[in-house]
Image 1: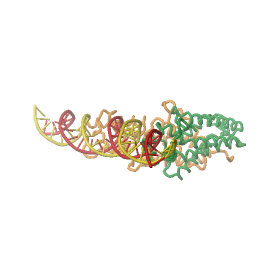
Image 2 (image 1 turned 90 degrees about the vertical axis):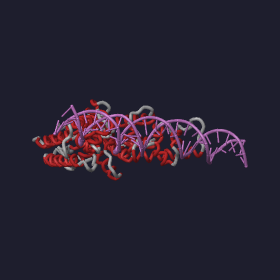
Image 3 (image 1 turned 180 degrees about the vertical axis):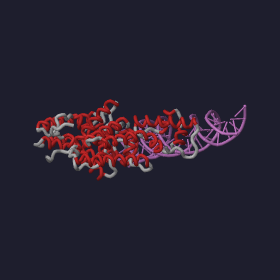
Image 4 (image 1 turned 90 degrees about the horizontal axis):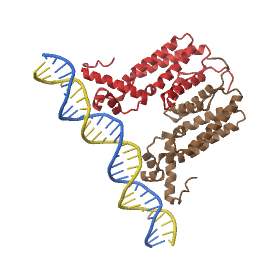
Length: 195
Length: 195
DNA sequence: GTGTTACCGGACGCAGGCGTCCACTTGGCT
DNA sequence: AGCCAAGTGGACGCCTGCGTCCGGTAACAC
């Protein structure tokens, strides 16, 4: 979508580019954003120079690698908004977002990082958070979402979610699900009674 | 308490040792456990060799540095147990633990790490978790703590809490407090109604 | 005061990540 | 078939963190 700058790559270069993105995608998902550039290059079967020539900053690679995840994130909130019961939609968003982030360590980091230059992801982030705000407003009207909920609470919980990291993927998913369930509990309106 | 091995240090060595622990303590608290040994040595005004001679493994340094935090953690759960209202005690434990961990990044990592050889901290951890289990059992009896709570939920939330990391210490404390409040909400027994 | 020895810290070599340069290869046009 | 610019990856130099060695210093006993 942004690679029409100048003059179209040669076929072999284009192939390498694809392999690089693929490698980056799987490594970011499994290990997080701090995998060495070298490792990505090796996995892609490519020299370091090629990687750096195509993606001078790691940022560029990140933006490209998480395009699909961003799309999926959009889909999640859109479906949440489409749900007839806003509270149920809200819950679904939390559950599915947690699962997405559980399966992709790197995406969480990228999504939460406030680093400049990530215009694409930042725009995505804004859209998603705005949508959640809308959904939350509706959910509050039903009285099921606590009135003092703010979008920052969700960000807070996403930050927190990144802290739960288990050894096996199975354990990771289970823990994430439990976390999502607890988070939903935390956001549910408590029927008056104080402390 | 464990430094009577063999023959008592010379006065200057003992002084260095103290400075090293002090440096490690403040650096661990501020930066987490991954501060380079070199940095600790520099802060303590000591050469790397001295640091390595006194604490061959970083583990040894960690154990010593967090002795006080461990004690404070004990105090927190003990006071929680002493509270007449178990649910209130339980809440206090969560609040104060979150604050302790918010002020000391390294301690969280040390407490949660399952690394072997950390017998001292592991014992502490066991004591604390057992105490929480007792407190939780009492709190459940009052019907205020949800019946399906397990100690692992608290560990999960502590892991999660480590994910919330803000730039300034003030923001960090505020976020931690909010997180603690939401966690307590999550653990509160929900009055029947499903989903 | 003096000797001994515990103790010190600068300097060393190793490992791994970084970004770049350049001699060679190869796709694609004619 | 042949040319040549686009493209490649190995090799280089830099930096940072690691753990250890060793010539020098000063604490403590006498």
